[in-house]
Each structure stands twice: as structure tokens, then as C-alpha cells.
Image (cartoon, rainbow, N blue to C red; front, top):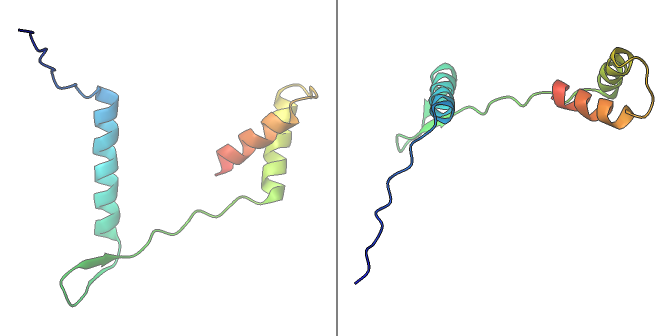
Length: 90
């Protein structure tokens, strides 16, 4: 006969639990704030959230140049500056 190991349920980390609670609260806040209309069958239709506008080429270039100047105008990091600017503006 072999002994079977009993697996204990995993505990949620505090950070993950806090993130989950924040996400749930955010969804509830959006649903409460958005204009909802009931359909014939009683289902609630929630208005879609407006998409964030994409940054323009000029905005990205200006921020990338700022990063270049902050680094002391050292050459060779233009791609990293560009991608960092895109991430921060998105």
C-alpha cells in the first residue's frame, strides 16, 4: 500500500489579493458610473470604456529626446529611449 500525499490549498499572496480586490472595485465603479440600459430580457448593457488615445510621433520623439538628454547625450541608446517613451505614454 502506498500513502497518498494530501495537497494543501495554496494561499494567495497579499499583493495578489490586493490586486484582485482593486480590480473588482474598479469594475464595480465603472459599472456603477456608466449609463446602463436594460434590454427586453432584463440583461444590463454596459457602455464600452473609451480607448486611450495613442501618442503621436511628435510626443514620443520629444519624450525620447528628454531621456537622451537626461542620460548626458550619450549615443547608442535611441531604440531604448523610443520604446521607453512609448511605454510611458501608452
